[in-house]
Length: 490
Image (cartoon, rainbow, N blue to C red):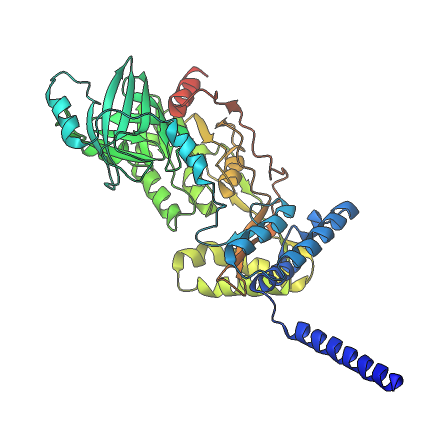
């Protein structure tokens, strides 16, 4: 009897174990597991940096450990934000800003609300709590500084009062509350006059963090660069902008004559769909001015890169010898061939892109097919002109920590000319792995972006950036005037 009982117990234990194993085997994979495994496969098979990043035994061991830990972490994760942060932790191993989860609105780790409240408490308020109160004050005097009054942003999101604190200091405050912390009277930004109608601005964002920016008063407009344009609405301004101001001084992207020796070109980001056409139009329209002025400043601060052909319109004025754009070293893989093949097909109906991209794509695809599993050299492109232009004689390219990717690449290309000086601060350092494309992932509607080629410019800049020839001092906010003064004295 004991023997029978033992056999039955053993059989039940075996059956339970089998059922548990079957249940575990049948349990569907989490969404994050699907994303992770697919991303791993795409990177291993197609990413141009795969072999270089894992070239040492130490790196391989570190990556293997991180991968197994991540695989376990994502096993039961289905919530997208949690998965996003776990994937970013894993991708950080590669130290490549061109390798990322590509989603329209990246998740942000929330900050405790009390931290925002602490910063808010440190920001002062004025006594005026509504527009009627402030208008009475404005009407009580007739000799206010022209900045003093009521201003409104172009999008009408903010209506602000501006007070003169004396000694070239001004305070802009909210006319109405935005939330429980951004109350009426709260200071949104302050201005410190540097010289006539030019200011250092301390601007406060929604979370009450602040940033120092450069601001210009252009008659009845106040431009805080990279933030807002505000128009004076009360009292009536003494002078209003004219058509020339609207065309050359107010736009974010513009050609502006700074003085009799200097022209400024502020470029749009190369991520703009038609950035190459916009820049070509700007340069063509003002070609007589550019080609007759001694110094040229090209402002590429905060340019995240994108279409490398966008910069080509400037080379006739910059080059004093042929400028060479080195072709990348492409990783030949079945999926990369398919991806470039689809891209080649997609541009057949667009004459401009077909003319610019088709020869390169055909060449790279052909090389990839002839050398599967290897790395192939893409074609160089040479910008060559019959004769360098006499003017401009000197070209300053302004860069900062947010100048990245192809904006960095073309900066180095422009540096091939002896006319060119790089000015500003060290750039972002995001241009070693190039030809970025993205792949769909199996959950959340996400895509994985990766570089399928390695830059062959001969200078690695990832996570280091480009060191400027001339560093703009940390306390300098008017970079354009600094550059203009430097060029005129050089």
